[in-house]
Image (cartoon, rainbow over all chains, first blue to last red; front, side, top):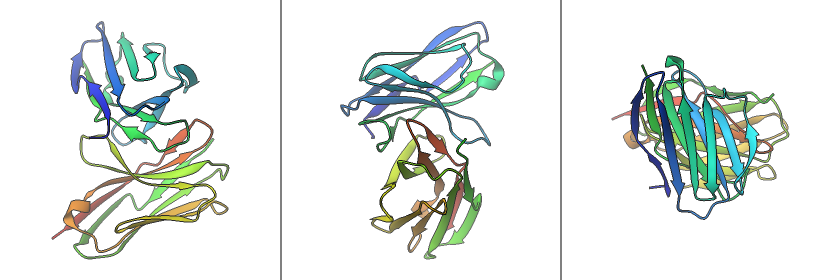
Length: 112
Length: 110
């Protein structure tokens, strides 16, 4: 266990659905990240939050909407997704940006 | 834009061999470099982090080196075991932005 949990672990949704992914860290870290991992592509950074402020939005489509209500929780709100958005979505945290990152187990998302 | 390349893409070796995994990056302006391990369908586990001012880090059978000026890092695995089978990812950390390579898929067979 890394101290970073993600729910749900698996999610199947239609293109018109709205769902949210949740990440929680129990490490007292100040930075949190969302990544997308697709088959045969490098891990892609989506969003970075430091002290609950978004510091990087890596050109992600607006159908992905992050929320960081406090330093322990991070959400990724999903709406009108496309089949190509099917991937493993990973959350990570670190004590500060540029420090060692600790990853959660991921949410396997399938968009039908 | 930072680009990270990992060679080889895949490796299959018998148990007991010493291994070298390679990572190269295009922009040497980095804070640190981190090596991860990922088992199938799971998240990443941090193995070693090398600060930009450091040359190497060691943990058990693992040793990672960093040559920032040439844009290279190597992960050395001594006396490989079947339990080392996984994908090994290199991440270069710039200002807020981690950039990952595609990974090296390692299989160690008994």
